[in-house]
Image (cartoon, rainbow, N blue to C red; front, side, top):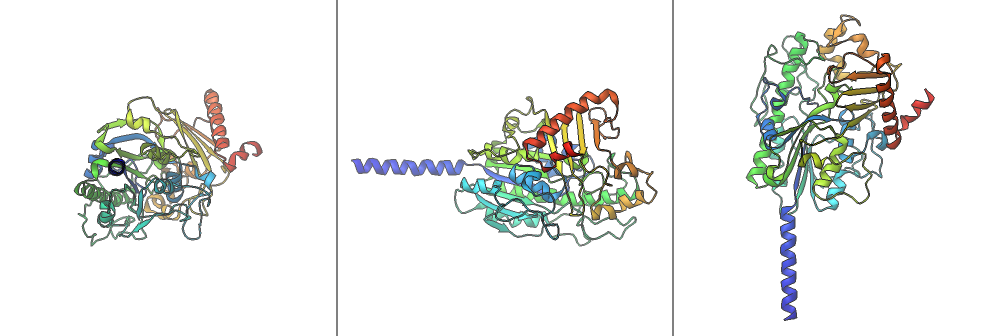
Length: 469
């Protein structure tokens, strides 16, 4: 009788473990490269075709105030994957080539915590992190990172899996990043990875430069319109890859039980966005679809940051570590109540892009105010090599430093003051710096105090600049 009871207990335990494994949430984190809020139907662009992303927004929650912390691919990804600001982890800029920035060896990433919790981990596409010991995935999936449909197809067997283990898939396109080629049409725009022969499995969608929407921070010139048209085409490839991924999830019965996050690492690859901490560089698309499509179709204006992503994911799946070393905070509460009260502010910290681009900035952003501390303000603002060479920039720069580039002059863009203060509610284009107007002195001093506290609490090496300069 006792043996029968033991067998029954063991069988029940196995069944409970199987149910628990089957019920565990899968995680799909999609990161596009240099995709701004400007180029998605669900964010208000009526020209571009992004049906898969628009549907994902209908199935999930769309964030209207989501921010990266560093508008540079590699540095941003380190924050996404650690929940810690990169000034504290040493991943100050690009990991690859002669730049060679790298996260401290003793840091722990989202991959580590999920593996400890029984997740299969796989990555596809752009990696751009170092060292591998910190960001070590079990499965490295191969595919053409300029063909998101090919990438999705090559993820199918990983998604399907061989058992009930939950999965974490890190799916990162290169699109819509600039490429090394130009298009042989008027104004010689960058190709953004587009090519005449297209890509297998991709339905080629082209855009007319006359129809694109030119953001306020860019000059409305033939050159910028030609480049935006190419950028749009690259974004549609991303959308088709997302659509294919979702199709695979549904075919394998995984869609309903998968937490899907769609974000970009930083703003679009144009001067005034990428590498800057103006809103076009750091305010980004973020769509999150929960298992069971909880809160489907909701839009929230809660302030969230990429430093919050790792703690939120771990909190959501019940894998939050006992030792909390995260700088970010879980916004699981926003997922449960997107229309409730959100955080008061987010912070940003950028130091490098390429190794030659030293320009440390620290930022506090509220619903109303943006305060930027340009730590190396006597220096001229450095430009990424591909952005400097772009027809969009050169066509304006060659007119002289007093020429307008969007809402700023070339001179104002390149020579920045120590402090910048913008009333976002009344000046969303960040065109009028209020930092040196006496009537905003109290606002400025309060934001300075908050930024100093943030830098001290996150072990920012540049906190000494407040005292010594």
